[in-house]
Length: 169
Length: 425
Ligand code: SF4
Image 1: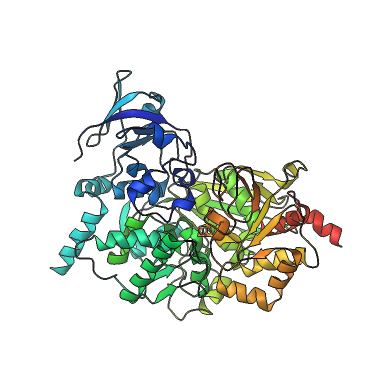
Image 2 (image 1 turned 30 degrees about the vertical axis):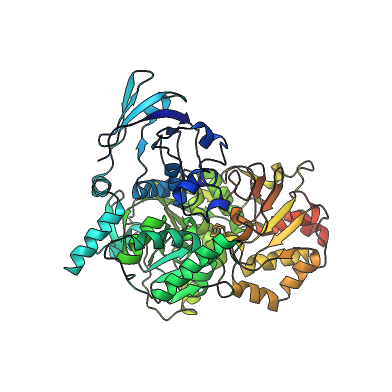
């Protein structure tokens, strides 16, 4: 399981969609680092210039709505952003983030209690979110057991490998 | 059980499934385009023991987003998918000139049938709900897993039932009905939910109209949007495939999370204003002289069908489009293009001053062949209008039916097709 994540917060509003996370014209790029250079470009062209590796995105409801492009979470991860906390995530983005190993946390209280620039700490294993700047802490929603087992296995790829190995035995 | 639950239960080998339950479902078809496939193929290559796809006849690969290749990088992705199709002996591979937009092509080719489970590396995979199939979009890692296992894990969604009543007025279309629905639900109003479409209004719709509506279920955040298959559906599918399929029906005691009634008798043409597809208003509140259009786009998996082009051609026949606007038309598939050519539609459109492109996604996602610049405004038959969707983050996209697009092409401002039609007679 990943260790504690720590970084400064960049806060966004509701319905941050995949077209602004990574505009369509970049969707023929595969390299995560190259994609990362354009993360959030459609909503905040300065994001990648301002942020430092490890920083954390905090957003309101329905983060990642729109297309199924897996390059959206890949771009965020590729930019060096360590996690996303939101009140809620769009369905496909949620799956994609888990599958590619971008840590995501759902907590309305945390989003309301954190402002841009705050320094926060995250415990991926427990979902505990600590606001170091303000001295508050929050508990993110637990993943359903099946998803937790996928996460514990290291994502969907190792899960499929295990299934294939079982089938060939 | 609802229609979605019935289909999922059968594909998971279970008698019953409940909303929230996580299941493994067998899939009847796995779809990808050159962008989602490129990532999925990379993931699959990295999976230990994953040398072959689960069934070379149950995968569809369609080149449609950046086609014909817009640059060397796009050509590289297209080639990557083509090489994979050759290596894995994928039966349903559609190159440029033989396919078109994935969601237009699959139904045309008989690859979609009632009762099936279809997953695709594209969010508008939900389109196939028009045929009574469970169909949903996923990202590339999920698609890679489906390529090799032939199954996916799914959380069974709760269902929102929408019952439509009344008759659509002249120049009010399925697109207007669906824009109104997305406006009502909101862009996250159906997140993690299935939408089940009911009522006399949708029973009367053509297959194309149902496609338009199922296509935009994702615009309300839904996992899938589904219609019950009827004689029209069965006739359409049986004309295209001999494959056996099983028509499912929701139980009479199915439990719905919400039931919404929408009466369409007074429905006007609808417009989604910038910058979300749920920012929907009746056209009478949107038509204004001071918001001139730079571009009109007609096409996409929502409205790139022959029925749509016929409506547009009828309005533009013998006319010239406004000198202030450019009009780009992308027929949805090679078959649609050929049909339009046979019916003289392509000539009508070209004579009116439209640029008619080869089939593909084109301008729909700001990829190429009609990308908007800073400060430009478009009216489009597509499904999304998020910031920068069709190009510059400083551009604006309004969404409407093909008829409203055609009427607006003549005037250069957003125009009610009923007004133009009245002026014609
Ligand atoms: S036409 Fe537009 S919405 Fe449809 S698959 Fe292509 S890019 Fe996506």
